[in-house]
Length: 200
Image (cartoon, rainbow, N blue to C red):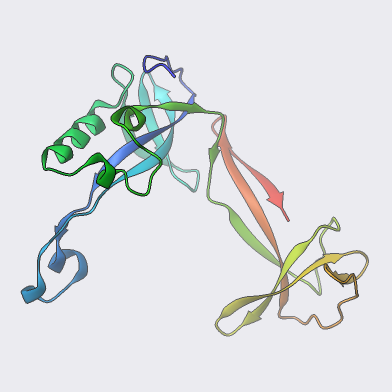
């Protein structure tokens, strides 16, 4: 993809930044002073955003909110991040170390800004009572039991007039007030709005 591609207001994009969270161990982890030392934490992050002004990206957070963080595109790249990457490399860190945990291999990979059709946001999980609220469709659902330490996955079931075990198709009669079925709501950002799709 050409680095000189043109972006229009409203385009959604993904891009990379480099983050330097290095610092003294006492400040970062609260270790005893005698154990203090410099901790190097440098990594890249993939961010998503929307072109809100000419060559200006605003980061869209994973919850779909606008962040108020802006990055300027100049000559097809984000110069501030490229400069930061170069400065960190000048300290002796290798690209391999900086890119560890990502799919990035080269500086060009890091600098590439890619258009996307939508932004995947963090999903939401909702729970409904097995005794009082049944799914509209007879799809497989996860059934959880509320316990004093939280919820524990108990069964995979479906509702076909009565609750049935997904594996055996046998009716389930042991559900109580503590049993809930789960809906995962896939959330996407597109056209400036958040859309939700239920994945049961």
